[in-house]
Image (cartoon, rainbow, N blue to C red):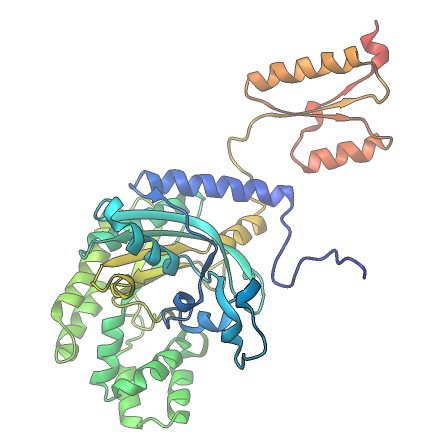
Amino acid sequence: MAMIKKPVTGMKDILPAEMRIRDYVTQLVKETYQTFGFTAIETPAVEHIENLLSKQGGENEKLIFKILKRGDKLVLDDKTREDDLADSGLRYDLTLPLSRFYAAHSAELPNPFKALQIGPVWRADRPQKGRFRQFVQCDIDILGDATNLAEIELITATTTLLARLDFKNFTVRINDRRILRAMALCSGFGEDDLDTVFIILDKMDKIGAEGVREELVSAGYDSGCIDRYLSLFREGANDASYLKSLSDELSEYLDGDCISGLCDIMESVEQVKNADFNVVFDPTLVRGMSYYTGTIFEITMDEFGSSVAGGGRYDEMIGKFTGSKVCACGFSIGFERIITILLDRDYQVPGSKEKYAFLIEKGASGDFTASVMQEAMRLREQGACVLVSMMNKNKKFQKEQLEKEGFSADNIREFYYSEFKR
């Protein structure tokens, strides 16, 4: 059987030019978030299948790469369902593993705990630009803080990172799952209708208000409910004043502290921000994960067709492990989407070490090679990057490839034995 050169569908090989950018972004992420007091942790790539199928991950639970039982545990004869064959799976995000981690180690951690986690996750999704079946997630979470300070810190840290990557004029969209629920209930929809209504509402940015109306009508909902619902989404209104105006209309279904808290988050972020972005209230923002319980947020950029970061408050997930409520809030940047944008921009990593390439004539003596290596070590001690390699027969092509790898023509040096003997 012939070996296959291409990676599995939805996975990708990463060439050196992209890897340099990925390494730089990863290091910048760590440096930036650590200045905000976040501490790096690591969790396993494999999780218990019971945790992965706990109805916390929404649609992602349909996309799990499951792992077969092994050895004596794998008995095929009496198994009638796929789930009977698996006892674990690859994680589909970093939030569920973090919740399990905190439940197991909370006694050893400070309170509140500010976690930073970077690592690969897997989803059996349909691949497209910026979306893969294996991809890196980069999360910051604050566990044990019920106040708005958690949201303010998360948004400020994430926007600071994006600014350090030269992103400007992006938008932080913010909403609250409790406001979503109140708007639907006060319009006349029932509790059992909410999931369907929110799925349709989530398409607002793609199909517009009329498209949402048509889909709600097609779903069989009362036209009066639909009209009242859509009247709450006032075109062009996205600031704190619009949010405050909803207080009276939603008062029967919503605690006033929810709206005042959201206003406080928006106003505080505006006052402390050190980057070029806008903060807007977006009542159509849904976020698909079922574990969100309160504030939700996303970051969008005009140059990319979808969000590049998202998160929110999930105050009930950790309690499913511990039996008691633990407040939690997190923000995740779309690492792969950020990398895609930077590659499209032909992004150059700033402050790279000066790079030299030493090409040695083949067949030379050991003393000659050692003298070249000594010169390379001298430059390395000064902080330079020095590649030492034998000279290929097609020297012109070899030098062209090196220039593509970031070695300037002036810093590609050729060493010949005949010159060494002089």
